[in-house]
Length: 455
Image (cartoon, rainbow, N blue to C red; front, top):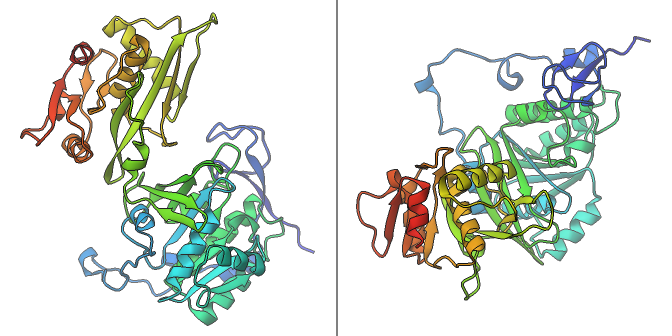
C-alpha cells in the first residue's frame, strides 16, 4: 500500500510547510497549521488539465476581440443582493456567502432559488439538512416549491455528475464544510477537504457556466472557516451580518471580481423570511421626537451609495482610576486618538470621564468620515447640550486638528437634503460649488471652527 503524502498548511494564509510548527513563518499566526493530505496521483492525473478552469482549447486573443455578450448578467430577483454582486449574477461565477449561525444564509438562498426556479433551472444541494427539513422551511416561508430541484449529498464528484444531467443555470452548495472529495482521506471540514472541494466545485462551475453559491461557516472570531485559499479561488466573498435576535441583516461584499467591494445590502428578518430594505437610511434614523444630548447624524459611503446613520455618545464621570473607552460599531483605537486630538486642539479634557459610543442599527463604520460626527456627539454629551435635529456632520479629523475632505462630499450633502436635513458641517474642501436648495452648508477647516459652529 502506497504511503500517504502529507503537507502542513496554514489555515489563515495558505502557506505550506514540510513539517508541523507552532507559528506560521509567513503570517506570524499561532496554532493555525494543520495536516493536509495531498491528493493521490490517480486523482491528480484525472483532474489535471490546462487553461482557464481546466479548459484545454486555449488560444491567444486580443482584449477587444473577447465577446462579452455571451455571458450576460441575470438578476437574483433580490435588488439588494444584485447590488452587492455588482449588478447581478455572472454565469460561471463562484460566490461564497458566510455568516454566523442563525444569520439567515440558508433562508436567503432558499428564497432566491425558489424565485429563480420559476424561470431558470435551479438546483439546491444540501449537506447539513435533510430534504424534509428544507421543504418544511420553504412551506413555513410560503415559497413556491414546484420548480426548485433538490439534492441531499455531500460527495463532490457525485454532485457534479448529477448536476450535469440537469444542466442547471444556478446552484447552491450548503455548506462547503460538510463536502468531501473521495480521493482525500481526511474528514469533511478539514483544511484539505475544504481546499479540494472548493477547487473542484469552482472548476466545475466555470467549465459549465453555472453560477454557484457556496455557503461557508465562520469561526468564533467572525472570519470564514477553512484555509485562506478558499477565499482566493472564488470570485466573490460576502458576509451576512446581524445578531440572531435582531431584526435587520446586512450583506457586505469583501471581494468581488465583477463589482465594487464593501457594497452593502440591507434585509429585514420577518416571519416570511428576509425582506429587502430599499431605503436603509430610514431605518438607521428612527430617532425619537425629543432632542437628546450625545446624538449626531453622519453620512457614510457604502460601496456605491450614501447611508445616513446616527451615532450616539455617552460621556459620564468615571468612578475608576482608569476610565473606560468602549466603541460599538467603530474602531476603539481611533476613539482614543480622537480624544487626544480633542484635548490638544479643542481644549476639552475627558481624562476623568467614561466614554461610550455606539452606531445605531448595528452598522459597522470603518471609514474616517465619521471622525467629526463622533467628536461633536461626545462634546454634546459632555456639555449636556443637544445638537440640532436637522444637522448633518461628516469629515475626517487629522492629528493636527485639521478637517480633511472625504470622497463624494457633494453626493453626501444631497442625500442628507433628501431626508429633510437643513444644515451641514462639512470639510471646507467638500463644500459644494453651487448652493443646494434648503441646505445651509458650514465649511470648516479646523476642529476649533467646528466647535465654534455649535455655539
